[in-house]
Image (tube, rainbow over all chains, first blue to last red; front, side, top):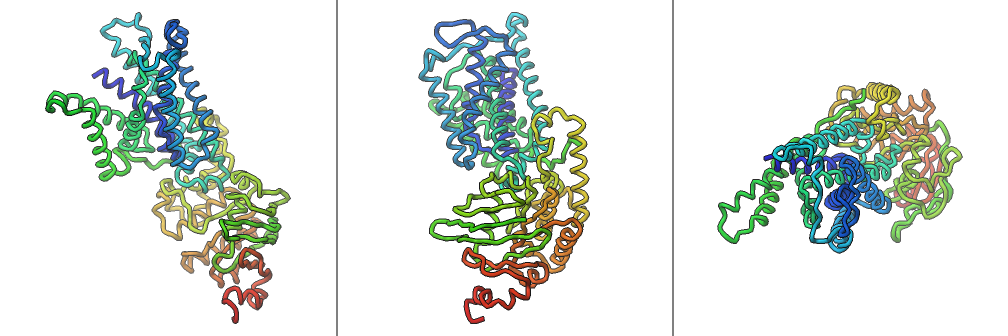
Length: 301
Length: 252
């Protein structure tokens, strides 16, 4: 249960990051897994002990590593964003999924840096301070605290005139332009901010799993986050957290099916189908998601 | 106030605007008419900077604007509406207005987290102004409704209100009368006239409803095949042989 909740918290962080991009600003980012990977690997390099087999370890303290992982993800988003932010949404989708795959393939091939497909161990932060039986709970607490901070920060941002501009861009870019909003600049901010959150989520994930391989960052992860946002209710931060919990729950719950199903049936394939079916059902029955977007009014008054 | 010199724009093989020249004088309601495909909306889109012209210049208040990014142009206090209303559907009516003022302090991400008093103060002023505009347009009771739920005429009013939120000196109106019932149109006319005389605003509008144009606009510019065909007061335009030919395909 603790394992599941921590996992769900990681995905809730990712879902909030995607919600600010897609739910509020209408930016199509299919490269979530790429930034997720960047954050996970950077934090692993920063906190690990020095090793001849991969980059670093710099043995930095955990909070500092989180900050660095977040910032580096942001820098990746900046470098990616400057040339592509002006693209229309379908092209942006193609470019971002390409970016994520490039990141993953670099991790696979650059073995001197990342140990490639063998994967890297990631430290358990503050392991010595916490009795081992309570470590899972302790780390769940850390994950939830980070989720809480992200949630409050984003919630505050979207309730402001800044968030109002994002919704305007989502609804109609031309209107935003004739109202003097520098649309590309706002989109770039959102791409960077959301991707920093993905990077942070990646770092939290790495220290939770304690072992990362390129296979943790397949395009599938991106689409799982998309399903969470769409099912939970894009444009509603609480909704996407609920979505993360629900979809992660279904995903993990399906593992128990392997006991019931006949030999040879692949649970992995079935759970993809079930998630797909769930998404179709939600879109048919409640197109706005479990918790749809609420009417907002400026909360700054 | 607005000057267009030898403006050109081609789409594929079509010369949408082909060497167009005209000027809009301050504190007038200038009409832009012409048959379908004359290039009127293209001229508006060129003025808004949605695409770069293939030739020619556009000047607004001594600033050349044809090479400016589109978001800069409204900062010179030039606003516009669209032929087909573009309301922000999943935002409330009041949010549709409150987003309009240009360069709000609260639009900085930093200020959304650290809300210093001046940000709050500005936000209150914007809210009060939005309420004033809603009152002026007599749609206050709709303020918390999603803009997507409004009727066609109400959307027209809302879009008109949105331009007023930006304190414009020149407003481009693309067919303000299309799909608006006569009573509402009379109201809209009244707003335009009172904003012109009381606030010194200038209007430049495309319209197909000739009665409306004749009543409201002076002067009127007639476009045909991407060029200015004629310009003058309503009575002059009515008697212009070239205009009659363009509209009625010869004879008249």
